[in-house]
Image (cartoon, rainbow, N blue to C red; front, side, top):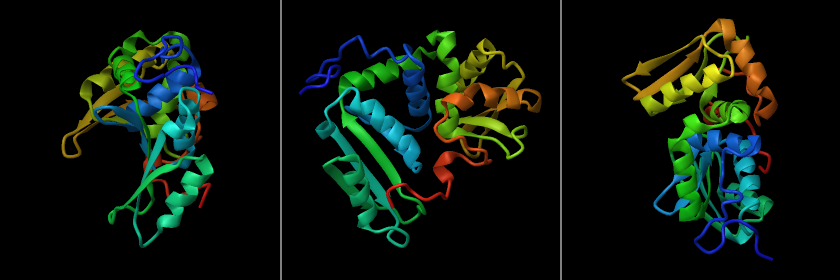
Length: 235
């Protein structure tokens, strides 16, 4: 039976509104942080299987499972081909490609689907993120934070989200004001070619409390989730 939604190159507008629900806003934020896309494909690239699984669940509401694809990069010193094979089996995905990446400690997972209409939907939503309804801003930032955010263990210091695009950092700074987070600043790190949106200590706990209910990682460490050295669920 065909899924409703994406059908042979077109998209049903009933579900392509990524602003419509908190769940979709979270996925949008996560994709903005760690999204994977090419000319006609879209998905997530991450080392955290919990985040990959969140995107997997989103995909299943739009596509038949046989449309989904996995590409797994592993360092053969730490992981062999069985990791990718076990993950694909766990998710029920038949289309798997595996590559070796010597500089990586953890496996990097690309979960994606070939769909230009869905790619256009995400790109359009990202471009017009300032139109995100206020009630779903918290979920969007939970996705952004799970993907590219960090905070110290005291839940106060070094609360930040990393961006590669300056304009996006400043747009998100204004979005934070919509949910009452006003003590922020954006810093450029020229050598790393990144921009950091910092939330001051006076409001960092408030921010954490706002996004906590939507987060899939509940991370309390001061490094981005893609660098966490945690065990995978399917290992």
